[in-house]
Image 1: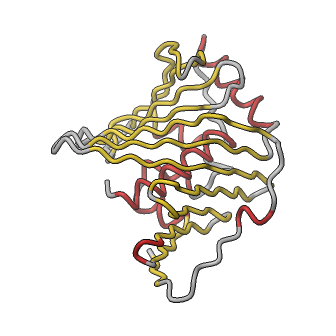
Image 2 (image 1 turned 120 degrees about the horizontal axis):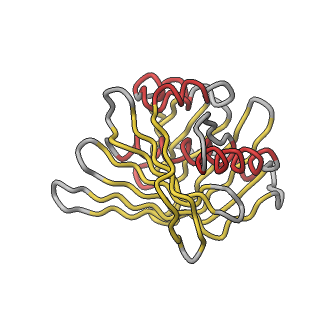
Length: 228
């Protein structure tokens, strides 16, 4: 899974889990956890948090680290998400409803794609294309389990594991759900290659209000726009 694809998946996965929580008909703890996530998400209109992202290449032993701040806004039929990266400095990922833009100032390039296009290339993430009607589809593609409780940065969390039911480029997804806010604060993607990417949110601020300029991206003159 290349770096660009993973960045697109990161921003849409986090937005989906925070603003459109999973549901399940399972019994016991899982059913209660997902019900609390659903209840918490109904109250979220805006959110922002620090984002730490790490990818480990298990074949060559390499490690990639990213840091930034993520902003989310939820309105009827349109989620907006932006990540401003401090590492690599100046890089931006922006989701405006259907449109997704990855701006890379170091090479003066902006990759532009859509939720639908990404979903068609990555069937296990097809919920990206239809975030408002996708819960049944997601349940049909994944087995979802509560595999225990764990502390993340001192916060008690419920750990949920999603395993694809069909052949996929990923082996599993894991969410750590804060048991005070019932919002996911950590995510992990394990690829079939064994590579592991982890996303951690800290300092989350919910419904504090975001200025409209947060989701405006003016590309500098001379930026090469590459459609995907």
